[in-house]
Length: 149
Image 1: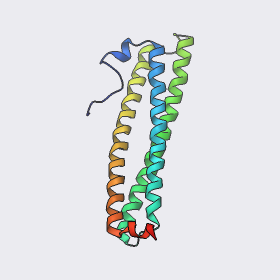
Image 2 (image 1 turned 90 degrees about the vertical axis):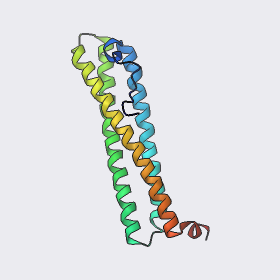
Image 3 (image 1 turned 180 degrees about the vertical axis):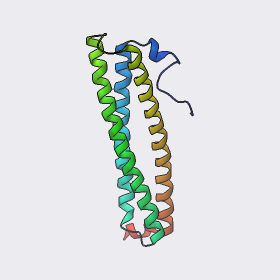
Image 4 (image 1 turned 30 degrees about the vertical axis):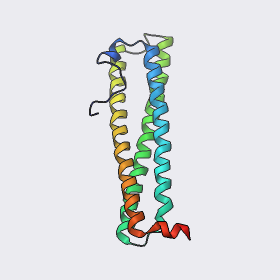
């Protein structure tokens, strides 16, 4: 999965028409919306157990994860703004193909796609870390017993 991309083949960006790129970019926006909600859910999980923690090292560990989730949420919002701007440019290109430099626009499209892929990999890693830390803290602090009370 090291080179995972949304585009179906190597020259897709150079060969695709504007409508195809528009549909692809709409998918990016939908995916980013999902990831923003996923990050909110992970923060909710962390927050749910945070109030029960008693050990300083566990509190520090959970705080570090939460700060990372907040940072990633901001990164997601920035990517969503970039994708929305990109969609706007695509709509203008569909209406007037000479509005922007086609080659420069396609390079921008590819860079945006690469940034999204880096972000997706980070979210996946963060999700694993969040569940791992949550599981560790729940077992370490014996939180299951506290919730049943």
